[in-house]
Image (cartoon, rainbow, N blue to C red):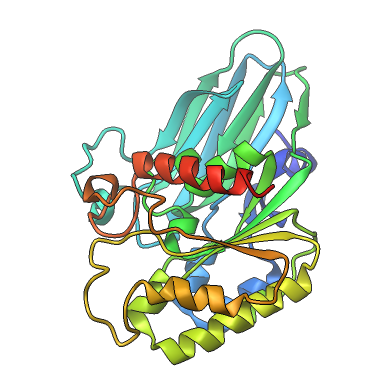
Length: 337
């Protein structure tokens, strides 16, 4: 049985819209208004907004088999992608473009093929929970998703919602598996549906936080600052940061908002116009003073200060780095919930 639009919508989490054109499905993690903002201000960021970070297909079924065919196109500065398949919380396989190519130590600049991919998965007997994590690095057009004829399918969605703002690290750079991103892991731990607004290279962008989503999140995480330090002065940063959080607090007064300051980066002692890297956290703390629904979490020590945990050896955690990031961040957030 090939799933139709209504069924695809029912099993999709983390997308604000599911679209169909000529029988092919695509997923949007940004609203039309948010996409338009990026389209009008930054072509590169607009392309990254089309990546499927945080989007999952999550459902219960008694089907013994699952077939998926998709087209993956570049939607980040990385060319590798993966769709992670889980049954009852256990990984059973992947659709990716790198398993047959040995990744280099720094695999972030390697070239990998994109295009159309397909795979069949054996799900096993009886009723089970299935979850497919779509890639953070690419835009997926779903050409076919098929289960056994006569099998049932029912979407599974958490009752809580997590809205995640941030830069490349929040989008997912450089996890080989999208299920290993820190926001994906955190969302699972707190029982929330992830809505990911991460954009590689982004800084505090107040015009984005002016635009509301069509739901009220239970939790919001905000993790900018490392690109700000690298690219702009402290005066502009202070204005952007304060305006971003003011907008967010006003739009979502009943949401718990966690401001995560930047994690360690290998070159943090280098000179920048901004000033010392440590000042980013100081300015963020100053910017949220008086905003009662925002709590600052220091990020500097959430990932060990060892480039072995970073895919590019400088800034972006790889899968084991993200695992430690999640464990340490969750411990901080759990104490506040």
